[in-house]
Image (cartoon, rainbow, N blue to C red; front, side, top):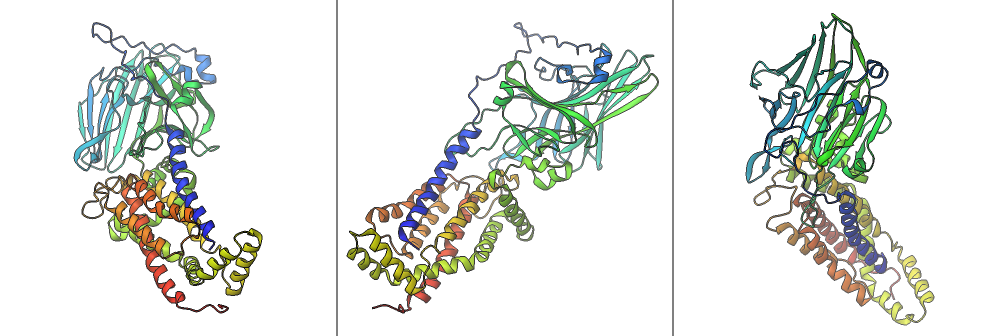
Length: 555
């Protein structure tokens, strides 16, 4: 392989990391916002009155429900009704009787860190950090079972003891009785939401259901030691399987997608998400809008339905609050697993994760799974790498001849190229053959990067000894140091560049990569370290074998 081209490729590889980092940070960093304040209380500390849902003419609802008919311009009061505690084997949830809104959710199996056993709190009604799931009904009646109405409950605490747990809440007025029932299932982060309308009013009830997620904008802090991914909103529809939407985009222009069958709407962050999943066979519309005090809502509106006097009707949808585990999400709704966003190389990242997941099922340790998968990848690429190392071993053997050619024709660049190509042809060596392993490793490395960053399965996953979390940097920087040494040793097995400046650049690359790897996830550094170690062994054996050969046409 031509030494100039090798130096160029390594420089491109190093520059790619820097460009990727800058572009990735810039693309995902939201605009800075002032810390939102809760204005749902009056100056004297008393609760502000939440308005009733607006009255909507029956003819309008019967024709087409719109986002403007979903009530709630104000921020919901934190715990403004009575709290109902619900606990399953994986969730601890607080439901507010005002609206039957999910105002708190602790993910019992996901602690904040390896040093803090406190469960991650996803839904919360903390001022300035609001993240809730709201559902309701609106109709041609003056009063409705919206997410602002007061419901009643038979109990204030529910605990899952069997396979399922039903939590009913009741609202009743003017002959209309609405029973909102949440049904939780053992081991699941998604749950059914049923709203049953019983009409004994003597009039025709015409209305629709809606479901929405309300959240204050998430401002992600960016820096070289942080590796946060996308935080914002997303929708899915048959026309567009996965559509990411930033808070800034919705602030500039509200979202409205009509005539959708199936799909889902979600609030997404690193590793976790909340989602509204309508009936996949029904038609509805999605919306997203910014409200006062930096509050955003994204959700769905169902088709208008008529319930005659003496009849009843059941509206259904699903909610989700939990980790972005691809296999679980895939079983809930089509394309929901795409919320685990693997970036532009998603097809390669998904393949790598599936392989990694399969190996983990056998060995039971994500660190050793990374080691095994790395070796498998190197074995698959062995023929190509062997050809490359064989070429470099031969080039190292006739390095003195190349130096003489450069010295003899350094003033004639054209003749220099001709003589070098003549020598390559005589020895049957392809100078570019060593480039392909480097080019192949770059997309694999990037795919590994996104896969490790987005896979919640590797969050707080230990390997051995000091590595207690493969998704964050090595706390003792052992792997980055080992990797730097291995890269330096690997360079010594390659023929050095003839140009002094290129030689200096090549000598700096192990240090440059070492600095990068100080802050990269330890799982990613583990992959690169094992890959380098395997390459060194492979290269040493091949170099030793072919380095002893004499040149066929050596003079």
